Length: 259
Image (cartoon, rainbow, N blue to C red; front, side):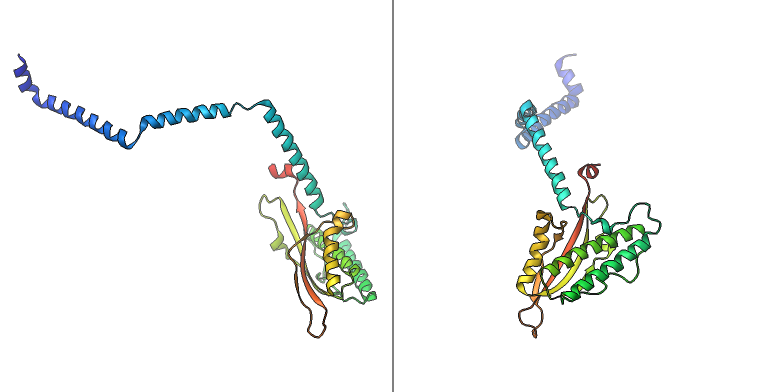
C-alpha cells in the first residue's frame, strides 16, 4: 500500500490529529498572552527566596524581642494592679461567715448612718439610703456586689465632703444585668452615678481627689466617665451641678485571659 492509498484510507484521522495540534498550539498562544505563566513562576520563585531569607532570624533579634515582651508583660501586670479596684476590708464578708446577709445588712446600716450623720454635721445634703435598696440581697455574689458598690459610694461621698460640696442629690448603682461581663471578657465594671451640687472650686476639688488620690496612695483607683456640668438652680446663683459616673474595675490576670 503506497502513501496515496494510506492517505485515502486514513484521511479523516490525519485531518483530526492535525486540527487538534493546531488548536493546541493556538490555545497555548492565547493563554500565554492573557495569563503570563512563566512570569508568574519567576515571581513565585523570587517570593520563596525572599521568605527563606526573612526566616533566617539572628539570635540577637530573638533575644531583643523576648526582652521587650517581658517588659510589656511586667508593665501590664503593674497597670492591672494599679487600676483594679482594691476594696476596703470593712466592705468584705469574711470567709466562713455563718450568715453573710445579716453581715451585709449591718454594714449597710452602719455606713448609711455614719455618712448621713457626718454630712448633716457639715451641712451637706446626702440621700439617706445612699442609692441602696431597703433589703440586703440573699445571693452571695450579689451581696459582694452590693458591698463593692457601697465601698465606692463611701469613698466618693467622703471625697465630696472633703471638697465641701453643698449637696449630693442622687446616687444610682448600675443594675447587675448591665455590668455583667461578656463571655471571656477580661474586664468588668461596677458603675455608680452621682449627682453633685456645689461651687466650681468644690466640684473641681472633688474631681481632682478622685483622679489624684490613687497616685498619692490616698484612695483606690476609680475609672471615670466624662463628667457633665450644668447650672444647678437659677435661684441659687454660683452653684453648679455635676453629673458624674465612676466605675470600680475588676481586671483578670493576663495568664487567665490567655487561658
